[in-house]
Amino acid sequence: MKPTLTALLLTGTLLASPALAVEKADVVKTYADIAAAGYADSLTSAQALQTAVDALIAAPSDETLKAARTAWLASRVPYQQTEVFRFGNPIVDDWEGKVNAWPLDEGLIDYVDNNAYGGPSEENPLSTLNVVATPAFKIGATEVDAATISADTIRSLHEADGIEANVASGYHAVEFLLWGQDLNGTEPGAGARPHTDYIQGEGCTGGNCDRRAAYLKAATDLLVADLQEMSANWAEGGAARAAVTEDPAKGVQAMLTGMGSLSYGEQAGERMKLGLMLNDPEEEHDCFSDNTQNSHYYDGLGIRNVYLGSYTRPDGSVVSGPSLSELVASGDAAVDTQLKAELDDSVAKLAALKAAADGGFAYDQMLAPGNKEGEKLIMDAVNALVTQTASIQRAVAVVGGDKIEFEGSDSLDNPDAVFQ
Image (cartoon, rainbow, N blue to C red; front, side, top):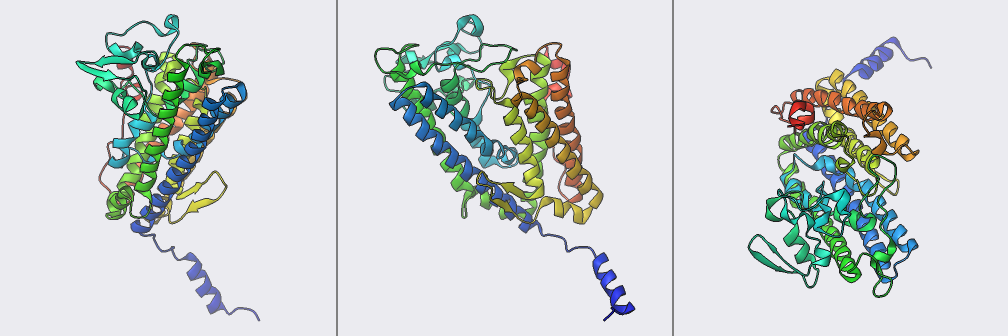
């Protein structure tokens, strides 16, 4: 039976009707659910790293060192996708420095090549401390007993004297202890710490292998403990979840703050353009392991995850729900369409950079003076991130929030200051 004209008109009317707008409370719940899943996955992968580190310490070999490095690399995939929860959430901001602070003065922790690293720094007297080789030392006027390297020892060193480069804990401290310094400059190649740096007794290289193993063990255990804390904060009943869900309007502001600040000042500026301006591989985010291309890519993916309200977990399952995209579309479909396209473009540009580095064109090489191909790969991504930030600010106006001052960077806002 053919439908009547009235039925066709009615159907057409129904199809043309705008979809019901999602509620901010539902959007923020999705955001909290994605955060909970991302930090839970970060914890699980850090626990796998912990197991691999224990195996390395128990039986140092090329194989156990490689396995620990592989576990570290895997742990970065979910964690980098959680960085978008920074900037808008004080609970995350107050905690984050313990787990992902960079760059670090690695001479604080262990031996370094002084020809490449340089001697003691007036700005940071602890930059060459080498706690692995130093069982007692002073921080200012305070005597520190480090005869046994423990979590407390590491906590006492972290950002000691108020100096941010004194990074003693977190992913990058563990990274340095697994890879050692990358001495290749703007040539390809990561750090090449030998497994013999962990042999107890005869065959130990680098000296103090027992203390180095103790530091690696304590730092890895601290990383797991810190991730347990943040995972609990986003679980049902957790403080971070409550902070964004109790006031959904502020929760949406937190979402957009994290997206814009990570996109602009942090990633486009401090992590990408600054290193290119300085032609300095020390400015790489994962500089010891040469994993920076993945770090950048998963940061960008995390920004898009939050906007689209969807996160794909390492096991392939998906956490999703009512999205910020739907909320923006209900207020201004054009802004939503443009922002989704720009997010796709930034992820594509970061994927192109990642593919080039994974294919043998190291990120170190991209930073070299005069390397036009590398400069283009990096700046294409930087420009895409900057472009999408303007649309994120437009989205703020669409959802009725206060104007947000996103994190900035001299490399973007005042380039001349970089060289002063």
